[in-house]
Image (cartoon, rainbow, N blue to C red):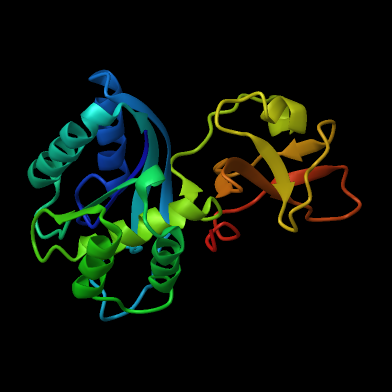
Length: 245
């Protein structure tokens, strides 16, 4: 059984981030033998004065392959974990979706994209969760985080939204590697240009800043660009360039 688990609004300025809590949940799932977890992604939602958030209004989601008998344990553990570990003043929300049992995939995806453009309400989130028969729960404060948690699952479901948590630790002489070498590192499936071109395995990439990947076509993709067409190498995209993901 494959699930998507997403949390939102668990932190404050001084606390551990929502991504770190998602990482702890995923780690526990694996340590307890409940399943195998894959790639935590950060999903950017609308920045608006009517939406309370800590810094960037983003939710964190990961995929897991589990045995069906552990679904309830995972939901119970995650709920209790958020109650205990979420920061003072936060409004945590949890969403868990069994992918194969999802009644209307497109409605959930539409909600995710809508949350990037519109101010949504808890009532809208609960109504959709009820209609689709999926788990959605709040664990402190106003519970406003359920909106982002539901939206994050919808966005992850597209396979084409989100930046993977963390940076890739890559050792390279002068920070230049071939595409083939880059794709040998765990968590880098493919290298593409910002225009969607798949970069040839023999081409070279100059690495700078943080090396981060994004979710595109259900793969972890390193996006690159050329500062100068006359250069013989590509450059990994900057944080600014990746913001739209």
